[in-house]
Amino acid sequence: MQNISSEELELIESYLSGSLSAGELAIFEKRMEADALWREKVKEIQLLTAGIQESALQDALAHYHQPFQQKAPVVKMQWLKKAVAAAAVIVVLLAGTWWFLLRPSADEKLFSGHFRPDPGLPTTMGVSDNYIFDRAMVDYKTGDYRKAIAGWEQLLQQDPGNDTLNYFIGSALLADGEFEKSLSCFDTVIKSGGSAFLQEAHWYKALALIRIGRRPEAAALLQGTSRPEAQELIRKLQ
Amino acid sequence: MSSGNFPHHINSHEQVKAIRANDQPFLQWLYREQYPKTESFVLQNNGTAEQAKDIYQEAFIAMWRNVQLGRFVPKNEQSLPGYLLQIAKNKWLDYLRSSGYKRTTLLREGLADEWSAEMPQQEEDSRQEEEYIKRVRENFRELGDNCRKVLTAFYFKKESMKKIADAMGWTEATARNNKYRCIERLRALMKNQKQ
Figure (cartoon, rainbow over the protein chains, first blue to last red):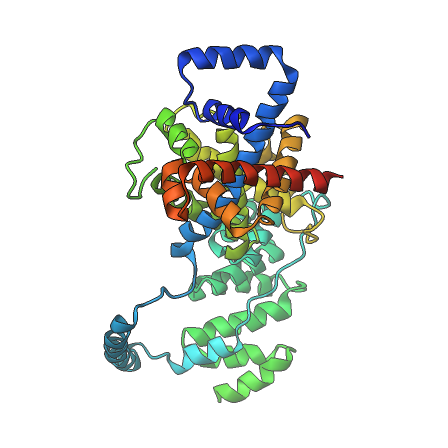
């Protein structure tokens, strides 16, 4: 470690912060050119002060991030009492409105009690040639259903009867709340006969039918599926 | 560059000056301007909000460092925010491809390469510099309270020796001397760690 005097430190600091006069700067730069040891000292101080600043910056970033934290903001105590009272009134009003206007129907409850999206197929990097299919499957698994549908529909244009594509487009539509639209996709899978997705297509079509209030059709469809939950669901439908 | 309270129409030259001066309102504006885009990118690519925060803060420090050391010079007022976002995305894609991230099924190589192709490879000497700065950060945390306060006030907040002396209850000469001693202590810590 080279010795750096207090005077040298201050001179290097002035250079780094750009506060040398034109004359001082010219002398400094000449020394930089001629003296390798001096260049090393300047570099060392530059990196040291960068590291010191980065430590401080790191602390500042935690503060900048506060609005994005998911925790509720801290409320001062004198506001808290008023806020709690106001919130209580709002909660009662909202709950009342929700209960009278927006309460879930029996169909909605039955659907949400049984619906779990199909987990999707594994995608293997570099093995499958079907990049678009795999890419859409990744979107599907991460819950970006619209992007997944767009990808698979691109492929469906070349092969409209494909059971795998229809099954997963149907699954994505259902998970995205497009219950009616999902029906025709599951129908295509069922009509294709012998599909590996036949049982699942029956099950998810039945759930879609329940969700839109077509219970008798759903019950009939469930009779033909071997899924263990089907019997329980039939019982609830009766 | 659509929202925010900072008068962000300052030109790229002024942006560099603001970064070099650690101008708090500007740094805060820049941070908050680009974070939501980073978060949605990470969430869409199999990450969590917590991971988005970590990767973004690393990216922010890298951007800051490259501006400080003159490695990145923005061409226009959009360059700096764009550069920050690009570093964050690259860091996330690097993480997805790293051995720490075992679920290789999730992202295709091709997609990752599209992004990283836009960033030149860091040169070996700048990699060494980064290692060195990382060690400074570690050793800085080992210093006593007073040293950390003085060095932060002088180098990060750019406060005058007079102001620092007043805040610490010292004379200006003592403040200057203490700052020098603290730098020497930090250099000694760095030297001992190296051996």
